[in-house]
Figure 1 (cartoon, rainbow, N blue to C red):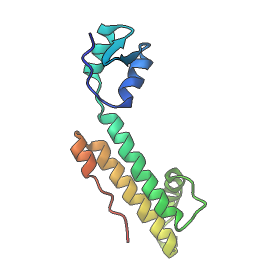
Figure 2: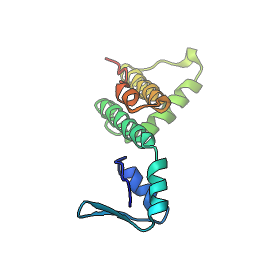
Figure 3: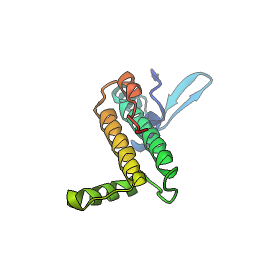
Figure 4: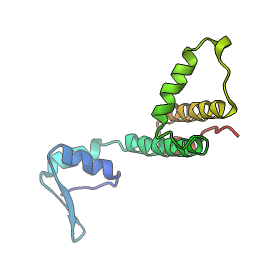
Length: 135
């Protein structure tokens, strides 16, 4: 008999990745191997899924802000390259436009927030992370 504890879709993916199945029929959880599946359920930590979900939301919000300035940018990874390139230029040679500065500031806020999310140890901490988006 399975003692199922809801831990999100990542749990079901972990069970499937281990070669097992878990389904609910008439209110009863059935598995391909009760002992193995129960061990996966007991050991599974949903914090990774919660971090991934929050980080995806931060990236989407940041990208939406960037797209308001430069619609051609498709991902924050595009900005990561541009930010690193920008930092490689000698400070005296830098003369950013207002919009370019805004994009770098948005990227930096997203990067800082994602780092904060990745350092969290509880869902409450993850939920409390708020990017410091520039005005």
